[in-house]
Image (cartoon, rainbow, N blue to C red; front, top):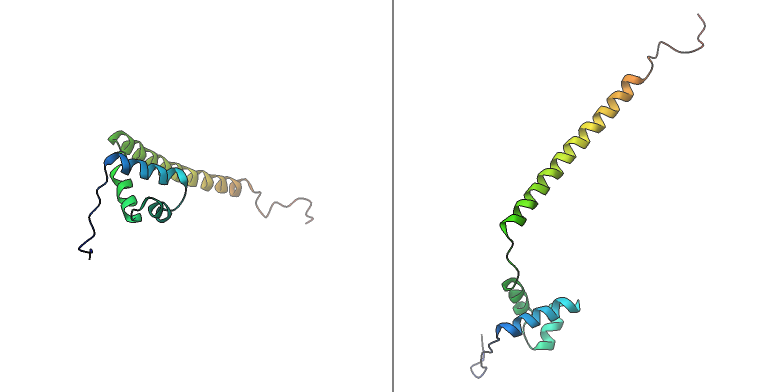
Length: 103
Protein backbone atom coordinates (compact mmCIF):
# COMPACT_ATOMS: atom_id res chain seq x y z
CA UNK A 1 0.00 0.00 0.00
CA UNK A 2 1.13 3.51 -0.70
CA UNK A 3 1.10 6.33 1.75
CA UNK A 4 -1.53 9.01 0.99
CA UNK A 5 1.00 11.87 1.19
CA UNK A 6 3.60 10.15 -0.96
CA UNK A 7 3.67 11.48 -4.51
CA UNK A 8 4.39 9.03 -7.29
CA UNK A 9 7.70 9.78 -8.99
CA UNK A 10 8.01 9.68 -12.76
CA UNK A 11 11.28 9.08 -14.52
CA UNK A 12 12.04 10.11 -18.07
CA UNK A 13 13.59 7.69 -20.55
CA UNK A 14 16.97 9.39 -20.35
CA UNK A 15 17.18 8.87 -16.58
CA UNK A 16 16.11 5.23 -16.92
CA UNK A 17 18.73 4.50 -19.59
CA UNK A 18 21.46 6.23 -17.61
CA UNK A 19 20.49 4.38 -14.43
CA UNK A 20 20.64 1.01 -16.18
CA UNK A 21 23.91 1.95 -17.88
CA UNK A 22 25.41 3.02 -14.55
CA UNK A 23 24.26 -0.22 -12.94
CA UNK A 24 25.68 -2.39 -15.74
CA UNK A 25 28.99 -0.51 -15.91
CA UNK A 26 29.54 -0.47 -12.14
CA UNK A 27 29.37 -4.22 -11.60
CA UNK A 28 27.49 -3.58 -8.35
CA UNK A 29 24.15 -5.01 -7.35
CA UNK A 30 20.84 -3.53 -8.44
CA UNK A 31 20.00 -2.99 -4.77
CA UNK A 32 23.11 -0.88 -4.18
CA UNK A 33 22.57 1.24 -7.28
CA UNK A 34 18.87 1.56 -6.47
CA UNK A 35 19.65 2.92 -3.00
CA UNK A 36 22.17 5.30 -4.51
CA UNK A 37 19.65 6.63 -7.06
CA UNK A 38 16.59 6.43 -4.81
CA UNK A 39 14.73 3.82 -6.87
CA UNK A 40 13.70 0.25 -6.15
CA UNK A 41 15.95 -2.50 -7.48
CA UNK A 42 12.93 -4.04 -9.17
CA UNK A 43 12.59 -0.88 -11.25
CA UNK A 44 16.14 -1.25 -12.48
CA UNK A 45 15.40 -4.82 -13.57
CA UNK A 46 12.21 -3.64 -15.32
CA UNK A 47 14.06 -0.86 -17.09
CA UNK A 48 16.80 -3.26 -18.15
CA UNK A 49 14.18 -5.48 -19.81
CA UNK A 50 12.51 -2.44 -21.38
CA UNK A 51 15.70 -1.21 -23.02
CA UNK A 52 17.09 -4.59 -24.01
CA UNK A 53 17.76 -4.54 -27.74
CA UNK A 54 15.38 -6.70 -29.74
CA UNK A 55 16.96 -9.82 -31.18
CA UNK A 56 16.71 -9.90 -34.94
CA UNK A 57 15.38 -13.01 -36.64
CA UNK A 58 18.74 -13.54 -38.32
CA UNK A 59 20.47 -13.95 -34.97
CA UNK A 60 17.84 -16.46 -33.85
CA UNK A 61 18.35 -18.38 -37.09
CA UNK A 62 22.12 -18.46 -36.52
CA UNK A 63 21.59 -19.78 -33.01
CA UNK A 64 19.36 -22.56 -34.35
CA UNK A 65 22.01 -23.46 -36.92
CA UNK A 66 24.68 -23.50 -34.22
CA UNK A 67 22.60 -25.83 -32.05
CA UNK A 68 22.02 -28.18 -35.00
CA UNK A 69 25.73 -28.15 -35.82
CA UNK A 70 26.65 -28.98 -32.23
CA UNK A 71 24.23 -31.93 -32.23
CA UNK A 72 25.70 -33.20 -35.51
CA UNK A 73 29.24 -32.82 -34.17
CA UNK A 74 28.35 -34.85 -31.06
CA UNK A 75 26.83 -37.59 -33.26
CA UNK A 76 29.84 -37.74 -35.59
CA UNK A 77 32.28 -37.71 -32.65
CA UNK A 78 30.46 -40.67 -31.11
CA UNK A 79 30.60 -42.55 -34.42
CA UNK A 80 34.33 -41.87 -34.74
CA UNK A 81 34.99 -43.16 -31.22
CA UNK A 82 33.02 -46.33 -31.95
CA UNK A 83 34.98 -46.88 -35.17
CA UNK A 84 38.30 -46.38 -33.35
CA UNK A 85 37.36 -49.02 -30.76
CA UNK A 86 36.20 -51.41 -33.48
CA UNK A 87 39.44 -50.97 -35.41
CA UNK A 88 41.43 -51.67 -32.26
CA UNK A 89 39.50 -54.89 -31.63
CA UNK A 90 39.87 -56.06 -35.24
CA UNK A 91 43.60 -55.27 -35.27
CA UNK A 92 44.38 -57.44 -32.21
CA UNK A 93 45.97 -60.79 -33.03
CA UNK A 94 43.82 -63.80 -32.22
CA UNK A 95 44.62 -65.39 -28.83
CA UNK A 96 45.50 -68.79 -30.44
CA UNK A 97 48.36 -67.30 -32.47
CA UNK A 98 50.86 -66.71 -29.68
CA UNK A 99 54.53 -66.28 -30.49
CA UNK A 100 57.06 -68.79 -29.38
CA UNK A 101 54.67 -71.45 -28.20
CA UNK A 102 55.97 -75.00 -28.27
CA UNK A 103 53.75 -77.92 -29.21
